[in-house]
Amino acid sequence: MQSPFFAGGAERHVRRLTEELAARGVEADLVTMPLIERERFDLVRSALAWRALDLTAVGGQAVDAVIATRFPSYAARHPNKVVWLIHQYRQAYDQFGTPYSDFTASREDRRAREAIAEIDRVGLGEARRVFANSRTVAARLEKHNGIESEPLYHPPPLAGRYRSGPAGDYALSVGRLDAWKRPDLLIAALPHAPAARVVLLGRGPEEPRLRRLARELGVGDRVRWLTEEIGEEALLDLYAGARVVVVTAEGEDLGYVPLEAFLSGRAVITTEDAGGPLEFVSDGGTGLVVPPRPEALGAALRIAWESPQALAKMGERGRERVAALSWDRTVGALLHAAGVSP
Amino acid sequence: MSVDVDVLRGLARESGRLLGELGVRPDDRDWIAAHAETIASLAGGRRRPARWRELLYRAARRAARTAR
Image (cartoon, rainbow over all chains, first blue to last red; front, top):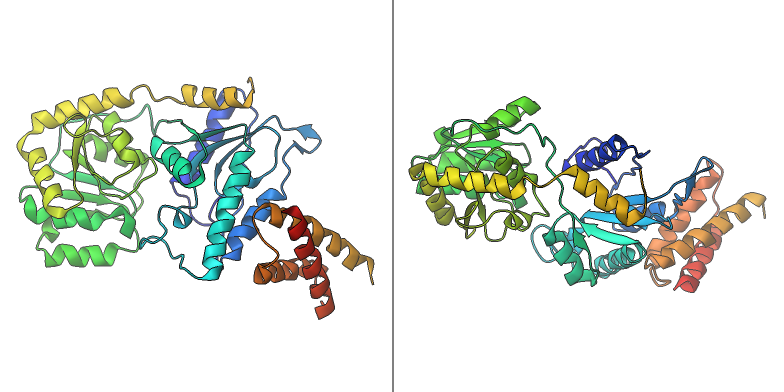
């Protein structure tokens, strides 16, 4: 499943998985279809398109297994289907009733949510094995659909290339400037941490509002905006030179940022409602976990500026925490579940 | 009745069955009508009389019912 003209983390993720399979001698290819939602029925229509796709054999050649990752690609038919769930259609589940979902109580929306649950029941239920990309995603699947899955982690995109450097004078935030990523929380924390400076890497619809907020709070001179694409080396440098990495998003599925921070030897400040990041960030262990309030985040930033040695130790512990993540293990688990040997 | 509409009716039946499998119910009339319209569009630039759409609608709806 992909969105035309958009290559987000999920798109990069499945491309990388395909490469990692190929690198281990598996003849693997990527099958994508766009999910374009103009009306609710498009969600069902898209699932139907996948359901109509029988991938048992292609061009007269048997396909040993299918690995599906996102709604509704797991509706595709194959007798040996393994699901590695990145996330469900969250607007119909945990995000329903929050500002992040536009589903209402109308009959059509209710029916669409019911249909999504049925698509999940059918598509996931017939899979030989269901993995989730984090414990958070697995817990949601259990809670909303009663389907058990096993968390299966994987390394972030530039694994093997992250590096450490001397701690710099900025807190780094990486992610789209979307409302649910809550970059406004970080900006609003700055008045509570007078020495702190911030680098915001990302772009998105919230940018004008955020710039206005920074001006209104009088912290505009302490925020550096990086809203253009930067290269991989520049990203590695940013992580390596940060004082601390901040994750403000609410309810992340997994989140690469903490993993990238730890592999760069950096501690992470995040919030109690962060979701996936909390599977790696522990308060006082590998970072600081605070309530999602500006003053609490500001207090954590003050610690980052006042106790750099404690922070360095947290970053080191973070590195140890994620050191074992490897594609060997991840691909091995997927292939084993599918009963496929390279 | 042309062969074309028979082919389309078979498609409506098959895809209607899949829709039923995916949770669409016979009383989801708007969705089934939208689906029938999509199938009717496969007739290309030719005219798609209302009776075709009705035929495909009924085929899809019946299939969705039996799939459940």
